[in-house]
View 1: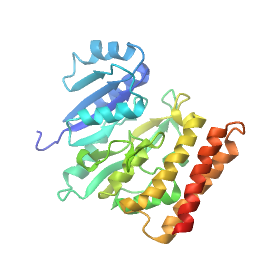
View 2: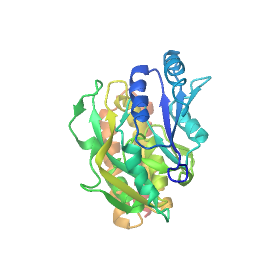
View 3: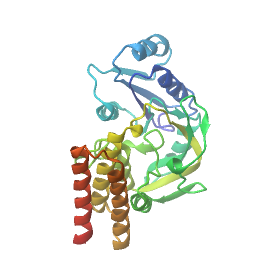
Length: 306
């Protein structure tokens, strides 16, 4: 079976969300793909999740590995630690408040199983939006489709589109499946810089630089929107602007934005995001203002030097 169905590692970092976490874990246990290991990194400040897993799931499922962090690692280090411990040749994260549909891994692995020349480095899909109660939300800006039909495309071309539009078409960490050996930098790191908000984007760019992307137009996962997410935090939005600036000015080194028009469009779009930050920052917050000014100066320098 291992020859026919390579091992896929599902990595679930979790923090103080036992109810959402159990829903996420159940969605993995319902997968139709037959060779999956589940690694759970519990970063919680209490024992609720640990007690749930140890009493209800570990006795019943031999493919679950539960890691109770001895100290709080934080989201990025928890993600990195899980990836280092994964045994699978293929990796899919599952954030503890998101969900998989039952055929997600099977349908994505079908592309890798038929990719004899290993030209595909990442498989992603459309994803549905749900609210805190699991009710469906309408599609919108957040989950725009790459294509209306299933498609295989150049990773460089899709990366260029992401950078020029400053939009994450790939999806959150829950969405894509990728080959472990293609992610040659630690998760959430690009050119030695650890990202603080657009963690997934740093790694998607690394993966897209290595080969093609397969896109499945049907939704295979759910991204949950709720009040406790970091994307709702203003300080995290500023982190995101800094990450975006670094993403764009570094992209050429990975083979993206080689045409001058593409390069300039990406830089100009990043300036638009910086200006939005200036519109909403608190006037008495000198630190935030200086961070935005540094981003602006960096982009202007790139525009005038090329």
